[in-house]
Length: 349
Ligand SMILES: Cc1ncc(COP(=O)(O)O)c(C=O)c1O
Image 1 (spheres, protein in one colour):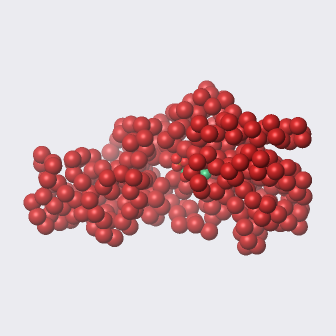
Image 2: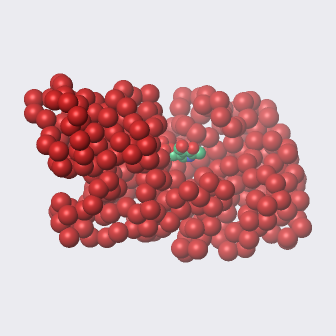
């Protein structure tokens, strides 16, 4: 089928660009002697995870147990879930996963660690646990090297757990000094920081400058989006993910309506102006979104689209847009080659 025959709105992946993006980062990390553990929260598609693994990724990252369940079912055997797993239901699900694959998790409190240890001990399994630290995002993560060192020692001494290193997001200039300080505190106690795992697509090409890091988790690099473009980490020609959308109305000369609204593009602005870049009309502005309508101002464009014309939109944030689709259509040279179910979409549990 030709791309022009695809019903809209549709999520499209340019397969050549996708493959190039996977290979480009893998080669860079190989050269920098950093392990690659891509974050699959961007695509949520087992087939893409397997492409990443077959190019040399040592494992994958999933943000949620639900994503990990889909990926283990699809045959992935090494997963980091960089999240505090709390509560009996989640701990039971984690134990079931741990019996089928190597599943690492993170913790930033003794509450998380004691829950993990009780579950691991009861079920006679061993769980690798990293300590999450904060480099400035002010999300999860301990804020001092002293606390990181204390939690590392607690993990080491907790039945059923192994201290598996340090984890943060994103990579920045605070990472190195924090890691060094933790090493100074734990190494005299015989505790080794075997892995320092960091992430972020916007800063991926800086990874080689940080000698402390051993593992990289990038997510958006497979697709790219308007945010990635604005960060300078990828070029427009490298972005593989787009939304095809039809102009369904032209209520006035300068205004058009697309069949892509917040349920297609998401309303995530990522600090940008407008809700996406229309490649055929780069001067146009998607200034508002209703659920199923994109409101576009075309006044700055030299030409304006006809009703029924199909346009290509680079969304602001590819991960959330991808999560809105049941399937993603893989195209090459203008032809549909594959249709992938987004198997882990909506897996927020
Ligand atoms: C813990 C963690 N690791 C890695 C990533 C991947 O970063 P990016 O989406 O910038 O590629 C994210 C993104 O949110 C994250 O939260």
